[in-house]
Each structure stands twice: as structure tokens, then as C-alpha cells.
Image (cartoon, rainbow, N blue to C red; front, side, top):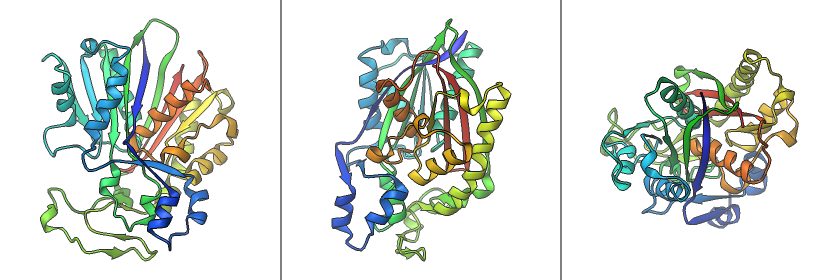
Amino acid sequence: MNVIIQDIAYAFPDNCVTNDDYKRENPDWNMEKLTPKTGVHSRYIAGPEETAFTLSLKACDKLFEKYDKNTIDTVIFCTQSPDYIMPANAYLIHSHYNLPQHVIAFDITQACSGYIYGLLLSKSMIISGTSKNILLINADTYSKYINAKDRSTRVIFGDGASASLITSTTEDRGIIDFEIASSGKEYKNFYIPGGAAKTPYFKSDHSLKDDGNGNFRTETDIHMNGLGVLSFFKTMVPRQIKQLLIKNNLDIKDINLFVFHQASQIAIDSISSILKVENSKVYKNIQSVGNLVSASIPVALKMAIDEKKINKGDFVLLSGFGVGLSWGTCLIKY
């Protein structure tokens, strides 16, 4: 028995924001200089009533047009922007679709490596016999955590959701192997200092602080050390990818398509260059959707499939990296 990604559906907020929109709002932002580095030309931004849950419903509804929701026996919801502190968003899904009580439901709070973690959990649960058909949801609205005056994060991130059906097959294909790694000591390179139990929102410092580069944040906004994160992952991600390939007796040239987390243009290009991957083998959609956090990889993978960039039997490598710091790589035979 092998475990496969049977299908993926995705959804975005209604509002699409372009770089020209940001330029009009912030005339001092040099978008001409920023755009080649970020690679982002437009992104979808959630409105006041749009949340990770509401976006996920749009993705799930698309998936359930093709598959019977009543076959789902596990819901895994990966988000760092849940609708409530409690309960987990997975229970909102369980309620909305009136799923049976025997259905397992839980959230994981991974960010940009979240799809890899979700696939690892899904495969483990199916192989163990705990589950047969898993609904893996990845959704975030990071825009709600970003200060409007923080140029470094606002121009990169978009909001969105994906819903994947993970199941088993007797065919010679599917999710082959993983490499997962963590570096908790680097957590302050990408975090939100206030607003949770340690420093509740009402006790947090809500005054704007300049990071020294003209980016303004409060204690309850995302704090990202972009250069520090990039420098760390430029070393660790290629190393992990090579380890996974060696373990499976494969080489870079054997991979038909690389689907990296769409962190930024410079991140994708740097990792691709270090690995010496041909540009034609690297899928990119960051220009039109931005960095979608844990939904980044599944949305890109689905777009690549729809664009016929992957054929049956192809080897596809997925690589996610971000908050934690955490990074993970998954090898798939499509």
C-alpha cells in the first residue's frame, strides 16, 4: 500500500492587491527595487470577515464537488492564524460539514513547512491503519498579523487556503520519503512577541517601533529577520534535499519538478542555484499569489498539475521552510 495526494483544491480572498496599490498608499516604498527581490507582483488579502476557516470552506467545497465528504475519517487543519484561541479550526470544519463523531480532528500550528508536516502525519496515520481518507487543510491569513507600515513583510505575504485529499493506492506511486529538521534556538528570527498567553494582547506594547530599516511594527505584529532566515535556509535546505536524494538513490537530475515553498524570488533562486537545478524544473507562482505560508506548496503543486508540468511517474520534490525555524522535504512519485 502506498499513500498518495489524491487531489488538491485551493481558494483565495476576494481582494487582490497589486504592487501599484502599495505604491499609491506608500509613495516612499521603492517597489521597483523590491519587486525583483520578492518576486511578488500581486497577492490576495483577506477582508475583515475572511479567515483561515472561511477560506478553507471555499477550498473544501471545490474538493467535495468531486469527492464524497462522508468518506473523510480524519481532518488535519494546519494554520497559524486560527479563528479562535480554542477550539481548533478542525472542529469548525467538522461542525460545518456535519461529519460523523468517529472522525478524528485536530490542528497543527506549523507555518511554511506545514504541508510537509501534514503529509508526514497523513502518511503515518494511513500506514498505521488509523485513517483511510484524510482531509489536510492548509490556510492562513498572515495579513492580519502584519503591520501596514512593515514593508519587509507586507509586500511578500498573501492569504489563501488549500484542501488536499490524502488516501491510499495499490499503484506504484505516491509519497516516498521525508526529511524533517528543526532549530528552535532561531525562533526569534520569525515570530510575534506579544498577543498570546506569555504577553496578552491588552498587556502588549502597541506603539510603532522602527526596526532600523524603515519597517514599523508593534509587539503584536510579525517580526521577521529576512536576511537571517534566508542565510540560515540557504545552508540547511540544500543540505537536507541532498540527504533525502542520497537516501533514495537519486540525484538532482532525476527530479522532474521542484516545488519549493514560495518564500521569495531571491530565496527560491538562491536554493536552486546552490543545488544547480535547471530553472525549467522549478515551479514558481509567487508573482501572482505571494507567500501563502503553509498553503504555498499545495497551491503551487496543484497549479503545476493543472498546467501539465507533471506527468504520471514523475519524481516531484517538495521543500518547505520557515517559522520555528523548521524545514522539511518530501519526495513524491506522481
